[in-house]
Amino acid sequence: MNRRAAFPALLAMLILLPAFAAAQQGRQPGTVDPRARTYTVRGNLRFAHNERPVENVKIELRRFSGDVAGTTFTRNNGEFEFTGLSTGQFYLIVEESGYESVRESVEIRGSSPLGLMVYLRKIATGSAEETGNSVSALELGLPSKTRANFRKGMDILYTKNDPAASLAVLQKVVSASPEFYEGYFHLGIAYDQLHKPEEAEAAFRKAIAVSAERYPQAFIALGSLLNTLQKAVDAEALVRRGLELDGSLWQGHYEMGRSLAALNRLEEAEKSLGAVLKLRNDYAPTYLMLANIHIRQKKQVALLVDLNEFLRLEPNGPQSAQARVTRDRLKQALLKQAIDNAENAPAAPPKP
Image (tube, rainbow, N blue to C red):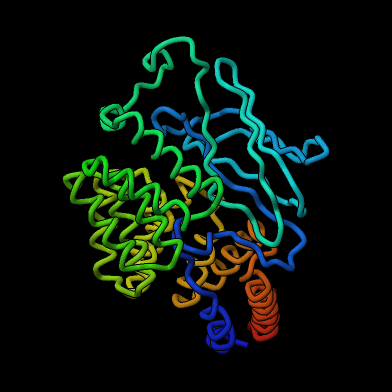
C-alpha cells in the first residue's frame, strides 16, 4: 500500500477535528467530555496589587476531606495545572511567606474548571513599593473604589466563571476610568465568553485605541475572535501587530498559526506553531492544529507524533476519541506500508 492510498480516509477523519479558539473562547481549550473519568484544573497565580504573574510558588490542591490531591509549582508566567482529577469539591492552597494564605474553593462537576485566577496578597506591613513588585502607573491612577470594582469584576469573571455577572462591574470600571484599557480588554473577554462577538470586538478595539495601540493582548484577543469568525486576513494583521509588541506571548503565535493555516500558508503556520511549543509545550490544541497541517502536507511521521502528543496531554477530551481512531488507523497504514515495501524490495544480488 503506497502513501497516497493511505491518506484520503485519514484526511476525511482528521479534518473534522475543529481548530481550537484561544483561552478566552466560550468553551475553554482542554475542557473534557462530561462522560470522561478525569478532569483538569488550570489557572494563573498573580500578585493582587499589579496583576503580575507569580512564578515558582508551590500550590496544593486538596479534597474537601483535607487529603492532598496534587502539588505543583507555578510556571514563569504564573500558570499552574492539576490533571487526572475526579469530580468533587477541592481547595487550592497557597502558603507563601510574607503573603496572606490562599484558600480558593473549586468544584468539579461535569467539566474541567479552567482559566482560574488566584491572587497573592502581601501581608499589610508597609507600602506597595515594599512588595518588590512596583504597581503600574495605570493601576495607581485608578480611584480606590474603581480599583476595588476592577478586582471584583476579575474575580467574578475568572474565579467564579460568571461572565454575565462580571459585565455590570467591569462596565462601572471603564465608565469611571475610561482611560483604563485593561478594563475594556477584560470586558471583551466577558462578551466573548457569552458568545457576543460584536460587543467583544468593540471592547477589544476600544482597548487598542485607548492604549494608543500599545497593548499586545488586545490585538491578539481581537485576532482570536476574528479567526473564530473566519476572517483570517484581518486576524493575521492584528496578531502580527500584537507579536511585534510582545513576541513572548505564546497565545499570539498560536493565533498566528490559526490564521496562516486558514490562508493555506502551511509552512508559515507550522513555523508559528513551532514557536508556541518553544514557549509552552503542554497546550494540547497546538498538536491538534499541527496534525491538521501535517495531514494536508502528507507528513505521516510528523502526523503520528502530533496525535501521540495530543492524546498524551488530553486523553479524554471531546476530540480525543476521534484523534485516537485516526492515530490507530495511521499506525496500521504505516505498518502495512513498511511490510509492502519490504516484500517489494528487490532481492540483494548474490555474493560472488
